Structures are given as C-alpha cells and as structure tokens.
Length: 336
Length: 289
Image (cartoon, rainbow over all chains, first blue to last red; front, side, top):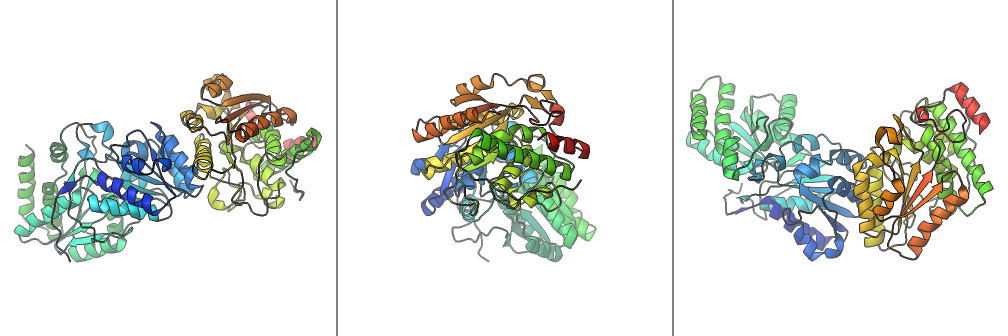
C-alpha cells in the first residue's frame, strides 16, 4: 500500500469545479445550471469555458432541480450546484419525485457542506443531507476526502448513468491522495493497515482519522483507516471485513451523527458482524459562526475525538483499559 | 360492474368541432369506466379537461407517432397536475398508443396506469413521473430549453397545470424561466375550473387574476372557453404562431372549464375533485354522455 502523506491543502470545491471542466471537454451533452453562487461552488469555471452550455437559473433551487430533470429526459447530463442546504434539502421533494423516481440522469453538486463553512453560520452549514440522500432509491452519494478525490468523483458521477450527488466543502482541507490513487463508486479504500480498531471516515474527517491513527500507533495501537467516499452505493464487504478483523469501529464525519456515514456503517455491522462502535460527528446540534478550525474543535470534529473514541471502542471490545478514560479527560481539557 | 372498452383509435389531424366532440365524449366515457373499475381516483378534473386533451392530441397540434412513442422528433406533453392522469391515459389509448383494454387496469397492482403517472412503468406517452404539484411544469420548461437552446429543433413542449396548482411557488419560478429563456416553443395550459379539493380557489388561496400574472411573467396569454373547440384551437394557433414566427414569447392558455363537465351531478362541484363514481352513478353518467 502506498503511504499517504499530506502535500498541501485545497478545498474540495476546487476539485468539483476542475472535474466539471474536464467533463465538459469530454462530453458535449454535459450542461451546468447555476444558482447565483457560481463563483463559490466553482461552476464559474465551466461557465467561462462553455458559456453556451451554462444556464443561470437564479435563486430558485426547486426550479433548477426540475429543469435539470427536463434536460436529463432530453438526453443531456445536467449538473446543478449550490450550497448543500439548498440543493439537497430545500429541493428535497424535487429530488425524491422528479429526479430519483424518474431515474433522471441529474447530477447535484452540494457545496458548503459541514461545519467548516465557517463564518456564515448555522443556516449555511448543512449537516443533515447525507441522512436524507442515502435513503433515496436510485441515488448515488459521494463524499470525497480531498481535492483530487473530488475531481475524480465529479468525473465519475458525470460518466455514470442515473441520479448522483457529490458533497464538497468550502475551506481548504489537506491534500493527500494523488491523481493515481484509485477511486471507484461503491468502493471504500483501506488507506492504513491495522487490526486493533477500524477508523472509517469520509470527507474532511479522513485525514483527521489518519492523524488519530498515528497518535494511536504511539501507544502501540494499530488502527486500520478506511476512506469511505461512496455512501451510496455502500461497500458492505470492506466494512464487514474491518468489523471482523478489527473488532471495534469508529466512524467520523462532518455531519450529524445520526443516519449518515455512521448510520450506514452501523447498518452493515449490525447485520453482518456486530462489534462495538463509536460515532464521531455533530451531536444533534446546529452549527454557528466562527473560523473553521475553531468550529471543528467546538463541535468535536478533530483527530482527538477519533483518538478518544478509538480507545473507548477498544475498551468496550476488551472490557478494560484505563487509557480510554484518560483520553476522554485529555479531550475535555483541550476543549476548555 | 362489467365495463368494456371499445378498441377504436382516432386520427390526429384538423377536424370539425362535431368530430372533436365525438372523441371527447369517448374519452369522458372511458374516464367514467376507468374510475368505477378502479374504485378510487379523480373524476372532476379529467372530465373537465377532456375537451382540452381532445384538441391537443386529435387536432394536429402535437406531433407524435403511435407506432414509435419515443420517436426523436416528437412533441412532448407533460401533465404537471398528475392526479388528472385518467384523462391522459384515456387520451393516449384513444390515440392508439396502447390497447384500450389496458384502461381497466388503472390503479391496480403492477399496472402501467399508476395512480399518478410513473415513468418507471414505461407507458407510451408518459414523458415523466408527476404528481407532486408544480414539478412537471418545471420539468417541461427544462425540456423546452433542451429542444430550443441546445438541440435547436422545432419541437414543441406542452404542459398542463391545474389552477389550484398555481399556489405552488415553484410554478412561478418556472414561469419566470420560460420567458427569461424566450421559450416560444413552450405552451402552458391552465385548466381553470376554479375548484380544488377543499373548495373554490379564492376561498382556499386566491391566485386570481391568473391572466395578469401570466402576462406579468412574460407569457403571451389567451383566455378561452375550455369547452369550445373553436376557441381552444384559436388559442393553440396563437402558440403555433409564436413558435413559427420565433417571437421569443412562451404562450399561456387559460382554459375556463367546469369540473366534471358532461355529467350533470358532477358539473362544477369541487366534491368530485378526488372521488370516483359508484356503480349507480357511473351508469347514470354513461347514460348522460
């Protein structure tokens, strides 16, 4: 396995924007709908390059979603991108009936996802949409971990047939996968080997899980780290194998702990090989204003929570170790 | 009640009002038979809009091929008011898109004639699923954008909404787009029967004046008697001319209709919005038609 190292930082939305341009070059029927925030969700790049295939729909996400369906039912591959709060939830009914029930070849780019949006505050920090989207029949849902993966995932959903959603973020996140690193819809990747506990993460939390694994290694604990960008379809096999071989699981996501990646993993584990599980994510609350780093600490979305949760999960598996209690205390002190 | 659907199909070319009324009567009879067989479904809107559907599908306004429903150069119709599907199913069957006997399967297990149109069932002539009000209309705008702006074809897109449906905000988002993109290939038909499930439009939520709203949203707007074939055709001619002359203006046809038209005890009564006739009522309705 290649050893992954951070080699910079870049927002995942840049990967979406660059991926769209590549799709535009490859496929003349790829069209993009704008919802007035094209500069911030990076569809502006496509607009500059292919103005005749870009349509500004204005601030009307329900209409943009259903117009996309009309285009898809006419043989086009429409992408509509906005902030996830508006293009996954405000248009939820359109996604359910017009996109998914129709099996329309519509692609949605959901930007400004998670708490790391920062200063814009709770209204714009969508933390619930993974739960909704993964229950939609026919929907494909991808949460890429960095710029490169976002670019690959954008191209991949453009080149598959059927409804798809890609979730990306506003702020720079560590860049650690390479253009050669594999990406496949429906597959999770083991990006670090280990058998004591499995850390399963998506999006911005994947690199945090890698840091947590390094810290655990200092204590002699070998964590398996799994990058799980494909929330739907879901890689039951990789997750079940991890449950069987590691015996304890921690999930981490920049989303409510309910019904997101953690929910998907729990469903797989409970059905196939029940093991102790801990969930890192936003715990049933809304976000707020602040710098992304401040918010990630406040809402418990750093390597420290993953690290502490791993120790708790191992303690539950083994039935006794004082390190877990000590780790929880450390996290509490760190957060003040 | 034992109902039979007579296997006939009508041609799609210009006709006299008398010839059109024969087709409309057949569609209305089919609707009654379908609903009494199904035991549930919407009577009022389908009966009230049968004359509109007759003019649209049987008077040369739409190009379609009953032998090849997915024919590339076909015009498309989207029923945004999905609950009115019995009239669309009856129309398509009478146009020869599928055997009329299949009308007896409305709302039954595994039917292609779903309670609201489902594209997944593959019924010829169903361009999209619809039923969540407002959405089909917006999908139709997307289709018209594709035809005119991307494929640069002469294909036409028609979409029918109810009048209560105009209470959905997304309708106006889509209407705004139709004129913004200068979709003269797009025709919006509003079945203005002034009724919705809970009562009269103005009592539930007043959307009037509809014509002024349509004009304000950039539509070339025609108000007509939705039970008068000559007026209906004149309205469609306004649309055909808009497209032919590339005026850049979408057309709105506000067809004034009566819910349940043709059946005395259903006429203009919102109680018949979502109800099927029972056997006695169906027999009486068929006698009247």
